[in-house]
Length: 521
Image 1 (spheres, rainbow, N blue to C red):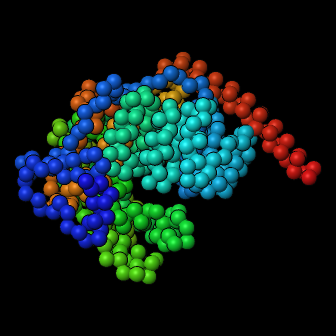
Image 2 (cartoon, rainbow, N blue to C red):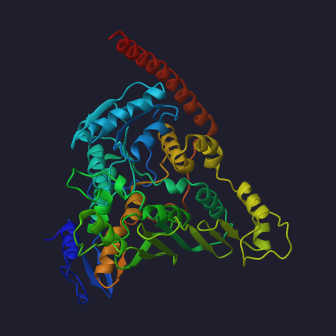
Image 3 (cartoon, one colour):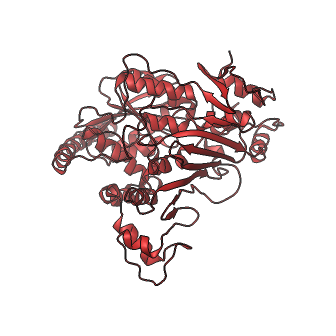
């Protein structure tokens, strides 16, 4: 039985597999344990039954945490920034730091020193994260390693009773998606995807507008990750001198499909209430040939690249149970401006972020939305004038931006959206609330790579989307952020601030003591 990995390697080597198959019910293996069959021209992938004793984690809550004790795994490009951001969030303690290279973990102690936080325990090596996950004084494992280590670290953390937050993409195939779902359901622990683009200013304000009916019913949405990575390819971690490509280019060479779909899909999925009244039912994907990708490999290896699995540009179309359509694009190869698209088409209005931010509403709908037009004959053939757009944004500024926006701009992290994401995660844990993104969102947003590969390997056939909620996608009506009462929120924040003040006192004393030792040597 071929695993999905061996299937993809065979395809990269030119072996013809699963191409133009007859429409039979013969199951084909796609990733370890999963199978699919043809059903009236559509590829249907088996959905495993929920194991006995498990139940849904939609809306999962756990007891309130006065202090969120964190262990960070992966301290290369993304990890150190996360460590620094957490030093600004009251009621958190950075307990442990882990990276394959010990020096990178040790370097993050400087961040703690700058913030007057106590030193953290250091773990390193190929399996260092296993010891970190076994600690009894960690509540949350924050994973920012390379893609191939997201799942094994998360699996280990969940098995050791930890909540996990995983950088994107959080799972690389369907098997990993189902394993994380089962672990979260079994352990009753949070498994959150760290999709920061859901917290960008335009996306949050537009989500609030959509939820308040400004655009009518959203019927179509677009998202993308179009980002020319030519300045970055050489900065991705390489496993020894023999590694000429770095992990990310190597992954794109060996895998087909939208391997980085979550930045585009996450924000529009929230606007379309995915798993909260609607679900994705069908996928079709197609890609261009690889031109830039093959050239990158040849320049770095000095050898001919006969096969580069991922096309330079991949397009995925999705249809939902309620008749909505989503288009997602991926391109990290060709020279063009950065673009996540984020476009909502509604029955009464339109929103667009890239390449031009704007809203299109006619005078009647703008007035109905609570903003009086200052111009005559306003129509939706063009974007709102600046004054009307600013008034609309002011009226519908998202409550989360009101709470964290100014601080986020000071702390930073992709303009501040990273800090908002981390702050919301801690807020929900401290107040015993459901997280903004759960393990079903993680699976839905990450599975486009494998599903898209299956579609394209079979003549761009339609693929039936798995129901990761196992029938419960329509239980909750409408996507919502959870909030504590003002009284509970203030009480938890006062405790958090008091803890952090004492922690900084302790940290300052420890660092002063260490400095004194160094001077006396």
